[in-house]
View 1 (tube, helix red, strand yellow):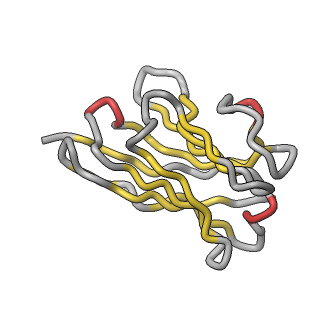
View 2: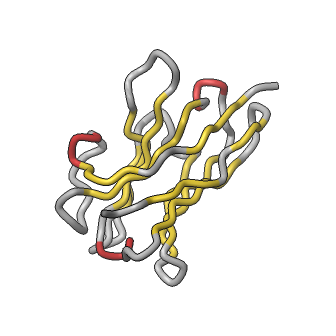
Length: 126
């Protein structure tokens, strides 16, 4: 059973930055495409970003393009999501997940992802 743990959430003012991390124990993230998702109260889960393991390609939702950056640190077995210029509409619980098939990002649809973390809260408020 893959166990993912997200960290780095917190309270930030609009325009601020946060870096989220997704870590796994006893599981090598380097072999899998990893996605970040978010869900705000009363809203559907939204795919935010994905990074492939085979070619390192990255994908972003239009709502975060140019503001968020996903990256891999395979030495530390961590996937990071650097978030800048945060907006109130970015406020949500953020989750990371592994693609259920393997190394390539296929979609930002959560149905393609199999193992999920518990999430970390991001609050954007002045």
